[in-house]
Image 1 (cartoon, rainbow, N blue to C red):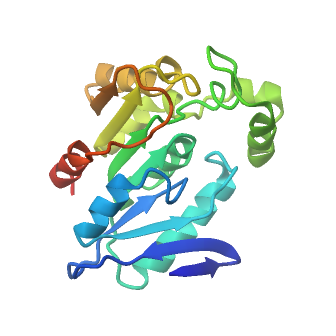
Image 2: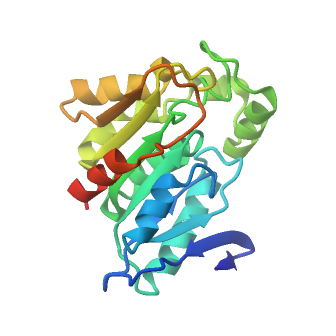
Length: 230
């Protein structure tokens, strides 16, 4: 079903099997429909799959407001009060920040080749090339100058202590040869900091793999993580 909330495009996919009574759902935060192996697997398990458009918002306040809209809409209609949430690529900024704001609403956080520091991507201030146009859109979404963005300490890599304190289980799929979102500046850095805090994530490394493809053709490790963290 395609629908709108306050004029913002949303999607809710209904499973072809009978949904459990508590109406569980799986939140694909960004790039809905791309690399959908885990999405299809969730549908086969009776989960609905949901998305609201937060394109080019980079975890900003407007992204959080839109995500709140979708959550309030679904839960007011009987969907589960806690859901697993997936952040692919730049969606890692949105999924992680919403988890930090609402840990009681998130059963598990799945990050896939995720941006964990917008200075790395799209800023291009580290080893990666970044993206100049996307960097301008990121600054606009946050209402920051470049100097303010470079001084900002609210990216996921800066919030490891706060994320550990939520006790939300975290899964990270990390392509070790990611040329777009360098893992040592993003997911591996966040994973190391979480581990040092005594809250190690479940880390699935993909040696030799670049930024694409996301997910796994056999998503069983992802499903196993979700089974253990309902």
